[in-house]
Image (cartoon, rainbow, N blue to C red; front, top):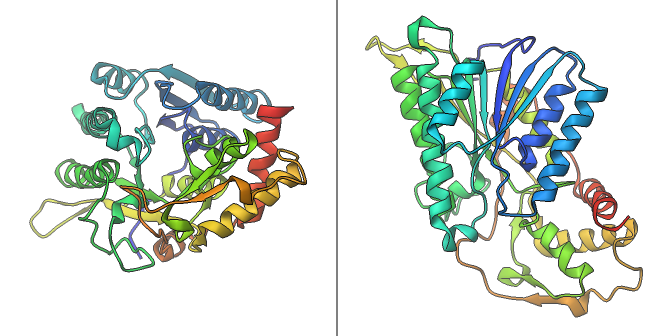
Length: 365
């Protein structure tokens, strides 16, 4: 078992980048509902990679939590990009965060093929700015950042043929620039943990889904197309498996990780042993894509998003594998279970039902 410190969250200042994003906004809402006084700072540039109204909706949900469940905590939102070094440095200087959760990133495998500049700016330069700010948080013998948590991705496993994917596996064969930037984040964090004794934990997320999720994800895009009467394209002829992980499970895992940074220790060379860890957060239960689509279709009908007599077969097209995709994602979550006594357990139908109900409320009612 990895040696861990324990952080009491009460009265801590937590910086969450990508705070209007899918995971970020749900994490902020969860933290604010913990019933302990917190000072939470959120940064997000609200870019138009996808429908900004969904990001605005998530921010309103945070405000609802503040107004109903979290009167003892403070929430400050800053519109800006982490690739802006002056902004990042100013936020660290002004708020002196105890915990940093870096979720800001340009997401999407296929988008990285046509828009590589966005990934270098946000995922590499932006993360470098966060690391540098964490490093300098210890200047003048200040306590500084107690724990840096950052988003990695299941895509780092690339063409790895061994399943389920374990954090002990090699991850040196990315098949997209997005995956390469996420692997780079892990390497950069390791270097900074070694050089500056920054406790850091990377989280490899596996296909996160749920209400108010990202419209570029397959389940959301399929829903849009089916509702519009368009044909959905199913790649690799449907012979894909994904470890779909419901958003509430992801957030619960992140909160547990936040409280337990890797322990600082000195090696025999009198230099820090990097207080560094990597975990998978997935459902440990890959679903066949065609089965997933069937459940999604049933739940869309159940929620009233689509009519009872909808002809699904007429709206499907099977295609070969897309560049940058992998045929299967499957998380070995044994380390997460061991160190945090946590295993995601939301079943697929329950999760998709919540998504379908949200979709109807947001787009139709």
